[in-house]
Image 1: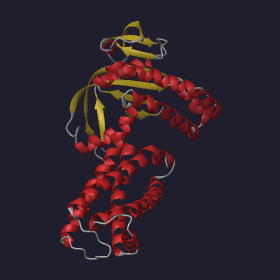
Image 2 (image 1 turned 90 degrees about the vertical axis):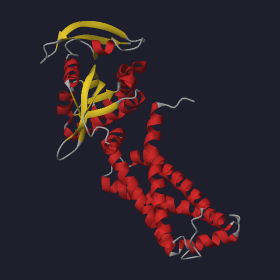
Image 3 (image 1 turned 60 degrees about the vertical axis):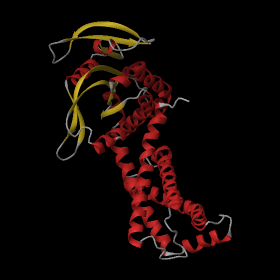
Image 4 (image 1 turned 135 degrees about the horizontal axis):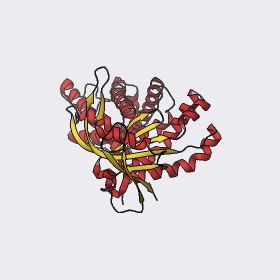
Length: 362
């Protein structure tokens, strides 16, 4: 069964939670073995860290991490999207803590039965659970879980605000030293944005932009694109060549966004009094990518390809086309159902070299 790009993205975002729980669990277990020399200091509630118990604990940590990641990515991230960072942290912490207590009630009797070689259905396993819940060991366990949960929530907050791929690139140090790469860029700009902003005012216009960008999300994910920047009402989307040219994804993205926006235009008109349109330019070339900034680090693209893409997009109105692409893009696109109409070689503002442009339609 083929996994959709959105599912792949979600899996890549959920997996780090499982890794965080597994590694932090191992650190806790190793620390405990070193401190107690694997002796049960409180025999009534402690469970010896035998090999079977360690394997069971590792599997349990992976499962808990996956559950936390699944809840975070699929549900809670959207549920608390309008809350402040501190409120998000507080409410999520309480929800997960309640979940952990439920998981402990389920898993502790299993671990106790495994440690003592008895059936989980025996009353001894459940009596041990009762003793554990009122012991200092339970408080220590909750403390350990709280530390792991805090690490997960910090990771989630940073990943959500920076973007999953950007955060991982920072962690791996992929662009710590500048690198030259070839990239496809699409500059996508809302039509009549100044008129709309003046009519709606700052706050309502901001809500319109939030809705506008949310509608684009699935199309960008499904075309394997990455959001490089939001610049007011303009969004810059980037692809590596293998992803962007495959099945003409960089072109497909534009038309998918257009279709989704068309389906939502009644909502826009009802809530904001406007129907929304946009125009875009796409170009391909070399850029330098690296971390930059003294007070705040960002991964930044620099190169003529960015300026050229912006100039191409600015010609959409003049050339009466919602989507313009450069010859550099057209020459590398696979055969598809898209129609390319030549617009001639145009001298772009600020550049002496002319660029061959094409409009695209279905």
